[in-house]
Structure formats: structure tokens, C-alpha cells
Length: 100
Image (cartoon, rainbow, N blue to C red; front, side):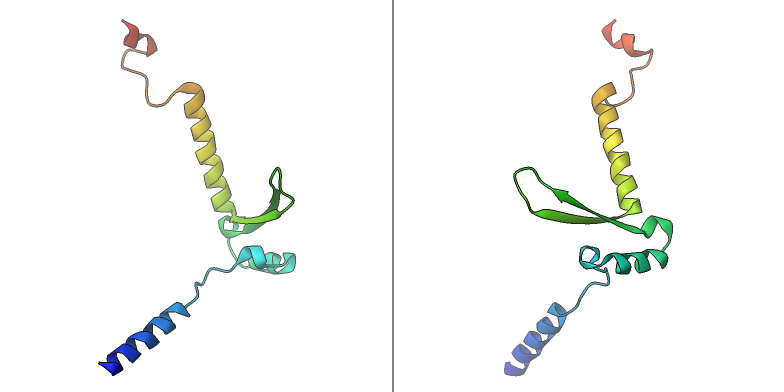
């Protein structure tokens, strides 16, 4: 029983030590980001920017791939289009068919 407990604790410690393969872009320097971007395809290139929130002097650094940025823009423009023009397809017979 003691050996099982020791084995389980060692296994859990080893599992906790695993790191992900994803680099921490927000901690990279400009030169490191440039070297990374030269080694990947266009959609995987990383762009970082800083944002200062109103009421706070603390800058927050955001790093996103070009694919993540374009996906967010597409989602935002779709959402704005839904707000401006309504969602879904118009009923059969055109928009005025719903009021007949």
C-alpha cells in the first residue's frame, strides 16, 4: 500500500512538471518574435500590442496570431451585421410577407 501511494505521488509530480509546447509570446522580446515569425507560415505569425485600460496605468500585452485576429474581426463584423440588419433569413415572399 505504501509503495502504491509513493508511486502515485511521484506520477502526479511528474505530470505537474509537464509544460505545453506553446511558447509564451507575451514574454518574448521583439527579436525573439521576429525570429519566430520568420519560421512559421503567415496565418501563424504572432503580433503583440499593449493596451492601457481607462482608470489604470497598468499596460497589458496581448499577443495573437494573424489567424486569431482575422477570426475575431470576422466574428465582430458578423455580430455588428446582425445587430444592424437583424438575424436570420427573411420569411418567404420577402420582408413584407410577415406583415400580411
